[in-house]
Image 1 (cartoon, protein in one colour):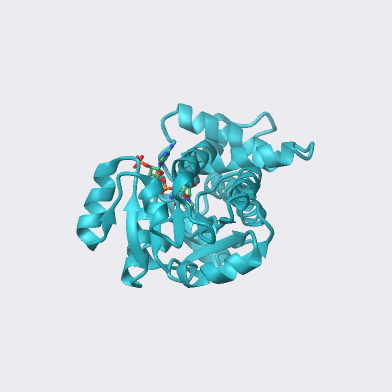
Image 2: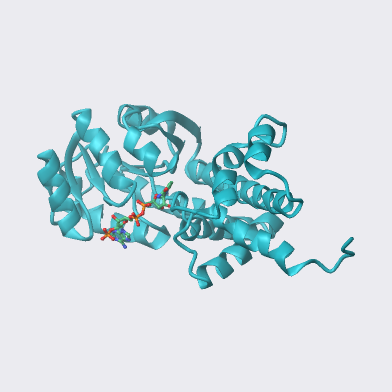
Length: 295
Ligand code: NAP
């Protein structure tokens, strides 16, 4: 499986390194050529100047770029080189409609397109422990598995094109609701004068616990929100969720309220902090005092 990698950002570069360790990586391309040259020097693989040339040399091209239009641009750049029978694995987080459109477009030249968004962050990308949610044609998925397995630990086939992105959107909606609830509860606990570390330790074992409570409530207790899952990235993902729900004529309250909070946090200069920074707003509610009785 000659595999190429396109998009060597915070996620893409470590994912490409894991493919290299498995002996699968033939070459890389990145819009900012310096990043591709540097990684190619480090790994001893080829840095391409033209993504179509990389596609022409590969059986599988993995793509990991920022957003919908970026993915459409990259596929357009590669299209002339893509060989019949080859597979494009897209690990970017984009809308399901974009995935379905690219799947149909590439099917017309006998190229398979799999939407394979990932979860697990930069740590998971580095350690090769990402959860990968795949949508597209099942035979192509089965052929792509040896490559996917080198980048992730949980690899799931969810159904036809778009199903991977729809699953990722489902996850992002859950993250929004959970981080809102954890931040609100922590602000309440603080206002009640509770010992926050002990509250986290105790409720971390309880029915209301979650990964976010155990791992991010301590950020709230310390009022320190180092970049983990950045507000800007989750905001982009929630705009995708907003669009997907709107296409069904629905507005989801958790998505809408989190988007409003994130817009304010970005305006206030917190867009590159971890999403647990939403605690700033929740604790400010108590600082300002609510409209209700104060006894
Ligand atoms: P990033 O560090 O900002 O890297 C983005 C990559 O996309 C860069 O290589 C960039 O090239 C390339 N790119 C952007 N627009 C492009 C365009 N129009 N044409 C060609 N290349 C373009 O982002 P990231 O954190 O790696 O995230 C990548 C994707 O993974 C996103 O969809 C994100 O939502 C998703 N994701 C991220 C995380 C996370 O924790 N970071 C977790 C799960 C999923 P340049 O170097 O030239 O800018």
